[in-house]
Length: 389
Image (cartoon, rainbow, N blue to C red; front, side):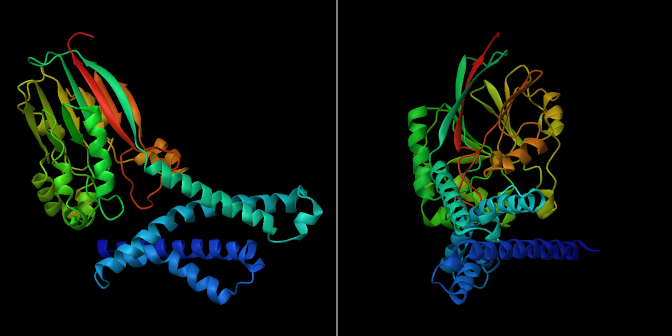
């Protein structure tokens, strides 16, 4: 089977699962809540499917719909994805309770007879789901500052210390808009970093909103002493507009390191790796880390930006002192943080491997649902000290 046919089969399976899951959610919500209200199925089901299908319609219809129609559908659908997750979890819990009741008779007879569930249980699910998503919406818009103090036992020219602010996964676009970027700038003005690093996924696939909302001007308010540097993330390649994205970032005063390194202030090195999964999108594979490290004086501190927190043992043996990554969002929505914890050696926070310090950020923005439950948006501040520990 060719790659094209394999993709078609995979997409068809994903859409079938998506449709079946949404049909089950829609049916149960109707049975548990809306059938008790003077409200006809002729209104409920068209409204339900309009919302449930808005995300794939907005994404797949970008070539046929107006930009505004696609944006509205995608935005509505993004919120629905969060509702879908928590409706599925809550309704699955009710199904388990019903199954246990059939097996053990744990529920009072009056409740058990009112199948598939009493109105009170349905309303409780509705309140819990709406409350969870509302909290996640609020949480996603209140980033924290997480600080780390690290000593690198190397001399760094005349530098004795360095304050680095790292911000991954902004996903700037129609949902994480210029207002959110201005919030980031205001926080940076309080942090006063010497160096700002952006470890991937700065712009979300399409640079159009970045340009239309003049985020370039907002970025140019950031003036750290040693500059702003970024590396590509997987979302730079999703939309097949990576060259435009990198061009606009450079125009905003951000130096993008794509498989190259720079020596800063004659004191330390900054290495920027291309995204680990780039080959899946355009066939180009990133350079080996050993190649990137050639020409680097390893007696000086070496900081590596790599969007995905992978190949840590390889990095540890390469002479890198500090690796900064993002990508995971720490799952963004519970219970996906449990999955990222299993997939990655470290999906968030700090890890030391020998002489290597690793920090993985949960990111500043969001992808898909503009909601965070079980993870917080953050700016990572690393206060580096050079010299003996």
